Length: 123
Length: 424
Image (cartoon, rainbow over the protein chains, first blue to last red):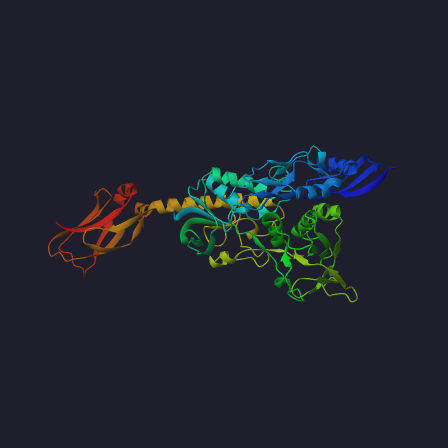
């Protein structure tokens, strides 16, 4: 039985309201997408919802006590609370470089968590 | 340290960084950024969430990464920076007065200025929130700085007033850090932030948003203990019997942003009462010639990418203005007092004026010479450009001499003119 779900695309700030016709997890048609990413998002949202996750990890000896980090790609949504917990335990030594991996293969997903800026060392 | 710059940019958020880069790339030689924080980047550094750069780079970047892209460019271009420095005053003549720990009071001047101070958050006082005044009431951006930069959690149980983007983003952020967000309240009947943030910040984390509902009262003496929420009608009048006490230890306010224009006003910049930012032309120049404004200082943007674009336009305009100023200065030449001359009027002359008219100089001698004298105007090499013989020179009697249009070519090549009166 085909059904229609309304979801809001979060791929960009436009936030298109999508009408997704689907049978179970199989997408039949997507209406209302402003660009090609809308359909990709709709499929992903039904089959394997993912989100970019941004947080911070502790830094030892840095200009600030934390360095901001983010997942290199969308992270499986159900695992986000576990990832958040895990990141609270991570500590890296300064200096940190932008794009440096701070948590490799997070929770076995194959997705790295990387620094989103340089964090200089301060004596 | 240099004191004169082509372009001085005040603030190093996305607008300021882009303005400085564009100024430099469009021919300004000495560009200076003044920043009050320890680092360049402005509020982007605390906006650790993704969603920046989609318009400009087709990339989904966190705020700090977006900032770093431009910071590296600024450093690569040799743009000067003054960090940890507070600008105290700006004048319409484009003087900038600032202060910092190392140099104390700093006195600068610029051919063009770009105002890029960004905006401020509306505070509790500005929305007239009733109730006690305990600790635990913060603007969302302040809490964002605590959590994302300083590593301090401002509380454990939160209520957020306002469904602006910063409020919703903080709701998610606090949840990720292990806090509980009890509620997001919005006085308007609609979301005031992006729908996308409603989905990925509130819905994803099971945080409840209530519209047409606001804080009626803050409860607690030393620390927030609860807030009393109430429903309102379309005129924001509380609806009876709609109160709810929500226990919490912290209330965050995400109730709007206002362009930060205290410095602009000091410089004589006129503000639009609707945007709270300066009136600007198509190159973001304000009503004060040579003073430009870029980014959220003009009006509050939705996307950082647009702030960057505005910064580019303003920076280019500032560079062009500075260059025109320089050319103008180059076309004018100082008339200096030489041998036995106390003063000369005019003090400088615009070279181009000689093409059509003679320029009459008037001066006074310092000491009397009671015999025949020669009054001369000489260039920097001592070549005589104009001269006149007089029977004597007395301080009590003005001497006068004209530079004729015939001297046009010689004056064009001169870099300085000196007036003298000597015995023949």
